[in-house]
Each structure stands twice: as structure tokens, then as C-alpha cells.
Image (cartoon, rainbow, N blue to C red; front, side, top):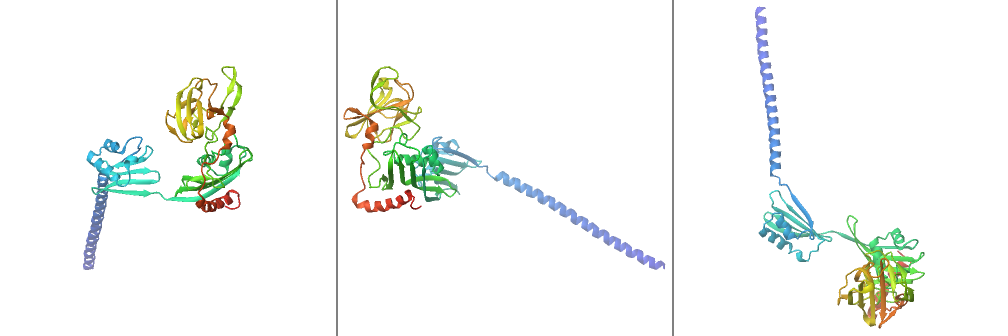
Length: 412
């Protein structure tokens, strides 16, 4: 019996030692695992810190040409003269940098160490870039996708021209373009009435994101109690009426483009002068409008006088074809210079109240062969300057008839 207990004790000791060794091995394994895990985390953290230390911080400057020329800006940012020359020379291979405009934008990017990375020049809808890749300069052009779509709108004047046209989906630039199309036929400041009808067809260019970048009128119609029915069809770069005669005429309908103005005094042989308090002729038309309103030449011509002229204040006189002379008085400031050629619609100056004047207005006069005449009476007698050549009339009629159906509401 004693031997039996001795055997059991011996076996227990062996088992205890085995368990002890197994537990010891497990403990060692766990310790090694935890140690390795801690070391791996430390190594990972060290790698991240190393990458952060190596990653260059990007320096970006975004400017317009009016802020600073590209060449100067590169030098200001620390790019060397030799490298700046190379960058601009590379940029010149894809665009003519000397013809950049003040509103054109550019972006320059350098790394933290001041090394040049890329320049991007944005002009209209095109991006030109020069990038430095493995010590070489690479240039390229990226064009933004443009979608063209034909649109049309129509309506009736209810309260004001602007409000009525905007309610039909037309934006302000398009409304102004429409008034320009008819500026030889209609004075939108004095001849529009409630109940007048309008219609317009235009081509609209937009980006993939829906931003409108251009609107070009293809055809237009204005029908009014005072104006009658007027059509304009775009053909070969100009606008023509139904019969193929050019809408552009010798005189514009007004020396002030479409704006909020009113006629305060008309052509008369006898009028009480508001300052001198004597009765004398008023051989022109007074247009009242806000100070600074642009004043336009009603026809092509040559500036014969530009400067101060007594009671007329700042004054401009322009000679036109067929013996006509127009004068513009009481200007705030003058743009037209003595002896200069000025185009129809070109800016003469800006409305003011200089000279003998009771308030901001334009004193506009016109002479025919040396004699003052009433502009409001003669402006409707203008004749078309030119018409479409006979050999192109058939093509014009096809264009006209297609748009006329849309303008008259016969089709979309």
C-alpha cells in the first residue's frame, strides 16, 4: 500500500512539473506577443512620423494678371531666374502669354522647400498648365466641355420691359442684347407700351455643371402699338429684317442705351430757359437720367470738338456722313477725344449737370447741313444701310421662315 501511494505521488510530481512548464511557456509566449505588438505599434508610429516629415507642404498662390505678371510672381515666390525663364518659355508653347488679359487667372504651386511644382493659367473656359515632373517641364491644355442648346421665349409687356421679360425666363444680359438688336428701330425708353408683344430665339452655351457662359440671339420679334411689328434675323454676322435689309441704320434711336430715362424737354422754337428766365429756342432734346449714365454716339463719325463750352459745360460735337452733326452737352466727363473716329454706339461721355443746368441731364442736338432739326421727327425716316446679296436671298429665306414660325408661335 505504501508503494502504491509512492507511485501516485511520483506521478503527481511529474504532472505538476509538466503543467508548470506548460503554463510557463504560455506566459513566455504571451509576453513575447505583447512585446512584439508594442514594438510594431511603435515602428508604425515611427513610420508615420517619418512620412509626415518627408511629405512636402504645398504652397499655393492664386492671382490675376492685374494683380501681378506671372514672371514677377514666380520670382517673388522664390523661383530662380533661370527656372522662371524656362517655365514661361514652356507656357509660351501652348499659349501667347503676352496677350493675356488683366482678368485672366493663374495658380502657382511650390513645395515646402520652394521647388516649383505647377502653374495653371485660366482664360475663359480653357486651362493651360506647366508642371515639373522628374526635372522636366510638361505643358498641356484642358478645355471645359460646353453644351449648346437652342431656346426661345415670348410674352407680353405688363408693367416694365425688364420685369416682363425676366418673368418669361430671360436673364438681364439677354434682355440687353435684345434691345441692342432693335436699337436702330425702337426707342425702348419712350416707345414701349403695356400690351406690346415680344419673342426671341437664342443659342445658349453652358458648362457640364449648368453654368451659362454665352447667349447668342438668333432671331427676335417686337410688336407694339407705337413701334409696329419688327423682326430681326441673324445672318452672316448681322441682323436683317423680313425683306433681307440690314437692321442696322444710319442713326440709333437714342443717344442713351436702354435705361431708366425720360425726356424732359423737346425741340421747340420758344422755351422759357429754367435758369436765365428768358424765352428762347431749345433746338435739342433733354434726356434726364442718373449721373454717370453712359452717352453713346448715334452714328459713326469724327469728333470735331471735345471740351468745355460755356453754358453747355462738358460738351462733344461729332460730324457724321451726309452732312449731319450731333452735339452732347452737360456731360459729367468726356471719353471722346478731339479728332478721334468714333463708332456708332461708342461712348461719348457720361451724363452729368455741368454748365448751366438745373439737374442731371443730356442736352442732345442734331444738325443737317448746318440747320438744327428735330431728332424725334427724323429718326423714323432712316433707311437700311445695306441688304443681303441676291445670290444669298434663297438661303436667307430658309433661315428666316424657320425662325419666323417660332417667333409667331406656330412651332417650338
